[in-house]
Length: 268
Length: 286
Image (tube, rainbow over all chains, first blue to last red; front, side):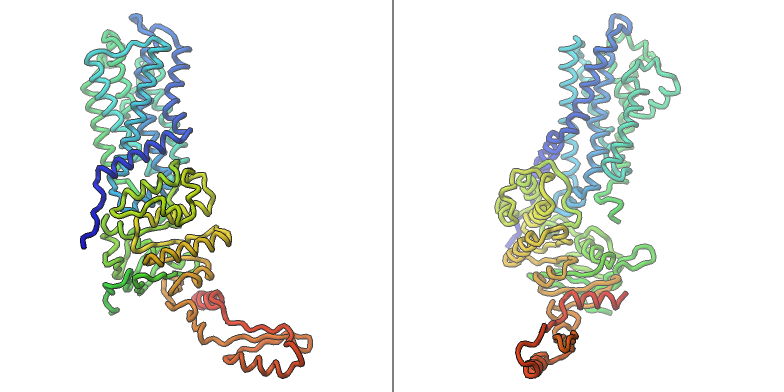
């Protein structure tokens, strides 16, 4: 008599992806704070800061790049750090580790969640930007740049979020730590203000983190090339954007592998 | 040198040791649990119950001894082995936005030969809550959902860590009948509990663990020499409460009946309860 075989990986992956999407989109707080918060920022900033940043380009056109970068950060780093810390402290992870679910399926589900939330955030931001503020959409190869910056940036931030979740005691402490850090990073990375007007030492600090490079890469997508002269480097530095984000992917992956725990620290 | 592991047992443990710092949380436990048996592990908090169980579940490493769970060292148990065991953790299965039916369907998808989620909901009495989200359930319903998640994979061996903590008496009785129906389906169960009546009601054998050592393993009626323990006969005579330990309570009652004209006032015959012998056992070892 041969025992029935374990379910195929692909099926378990699909099941986990469905679980993670339901967990996210059914929770009002996560939908409002992760998905809608950047949209609210866009609506408010677009209405308040309606000025010309040079060459006839509106601040909203500039802000589009920054708010999309912030949206990616929220959907990946903040979402993962808080979500996984919560699941670790409430026993969800320990429970899963006690089942024959392949461990990889948990991460596949999380990646599916990040991709869905990121795409939804970007689409809503673009629609609101175009409809309310007449933002110019990217064209031609700018879409390609958009795609790789968003992909590399969210990969780096997802991995970092998973790593950061291991530092927190529970979901609430993760939220209390990660949210203000993200906010400060947004201020010094050129999300809310023109990056060239931020003090140099803050520019230097921000350049250690992925958000600054995501925002810069996305500015090359949303702003005309003449405005590259406003960048501190005098260009979009797309090569360097790719390099730094890739480095963060590698660092994030190493941190995840070294720090991920299926059980709460308080659990011995 | 202790005996070799019993390959036919559901769980076989020899000389199990777990150290935390310089303290032995589990200090040389030997135990065999037969297939089809319900075994209750009793002991005060911090005695090593959960540590022992979590080593068997593959959650914790051990510092010494040999362990086989369904013939497999749990430290090296893979997905195949996990598919054969079910675990109901003390902490439960976590919070969720999914409904009971969705949670069970997802959980079933991890196993090679799962039970029908609808049947499992029926078995734990949550059919009416199939469409309710996990987090909206009451404490007792949550626990039944935890059990449902533990059994949907059709485990040969089920671990239940303090499954009825926080239940009202009626919910506990319903839970007991659930456990009995699982036994009838052939499931081996290792149960930890603080409730002595629960252990007496459900378990084929109980083991008492204190300070990391298994001090006795017996059927509930025999634990601590309970089967041979003298009965206590008590009555009221000359306005005072009298009681006497005796191995032959029937003879003493007959003697009393002859001595009093009618009813013996406040006559009672008591045998030590499981709780009495348990408290005595854990008191001695402290």
